[in-house]
Image (cartoon, rainbow, N blue to C red; front, side, top):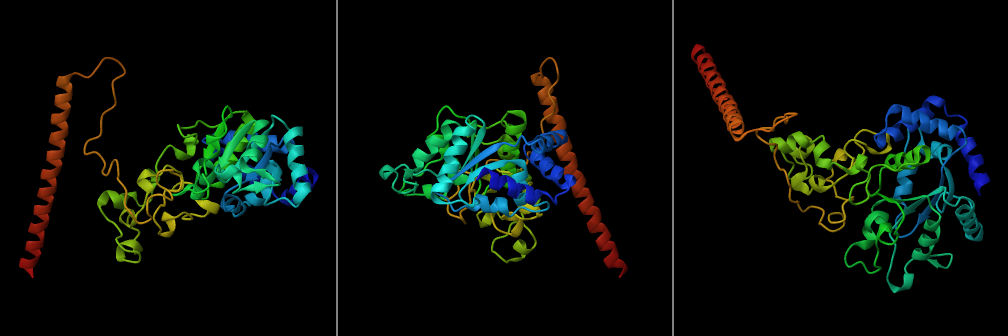
Length: 375
């Protein structure tokens, strides 16, 4: 199995220029917030033949995350991926089946113990003794435990593996949960999304393989480089939100003009993800809001597949502050008097701006009246 993949990787990457190869590595490095030289280090590591071993398991899912990976282009990550990592087991992509596939899995687990990255796609059912998901006679929990035991790191790709996703929607008859609910004592990186962006995965795996480190994670185990900010913060329609311009119906003038989709149920203000700045398949606008659909909130356990699609949500910071705070002094403290003076100055500026706008408006009225008089 490993030889077959290595040969395939050689065929796929033989016609790829070093420039395109470096481009993929640079994109992967940039995705995890690393500098350009890190991309070169990743490329050199892969070119030296020291590629990270990856075992990829499927459980309760739709294979959407794998499909998203295969749909990337310019350059084609579906072709280059095998030149960057050693994909030793993947039910969807491998040629083997049945006993041969299971032998390849067992071989990879034992021969590369402590060196491989385990990628899990899909939720894990916990009810009825695992009858809802069995592969080769083993329950999902048994397969996960066996593969995770010798893994150097575990990556949950997609919302299903990260927190349960679609299978965990109420009433959750199978008891579907995310991987980190079952694995203890192992570093688990959650990369939620339905599907997750392939570069978030590729960057994480290559960083671990090249530097032996994982990206900084938030309290939910998500890489901060991709999930520290909400979609709302970097949305190209944010200016319309601040200006109070909203689409109220699909196909209306506001929708056609690219206005904010909040009133159509957009969950962007509560959804932590980098979709708005890291679009899919390297195509500008290839993400829900980019094609005129509201954000579904698929990365958030309390939003995706729980809050109805067209229901609006609470916005924590609906408008920008009227006056932005100043930069704190390096030493000392700001006194109450200074604070009061700052308030007076800010108030004067705001008041002055309002008065100036009234004057401009008045001058505009005078000019318009003058033109009417001349006519």
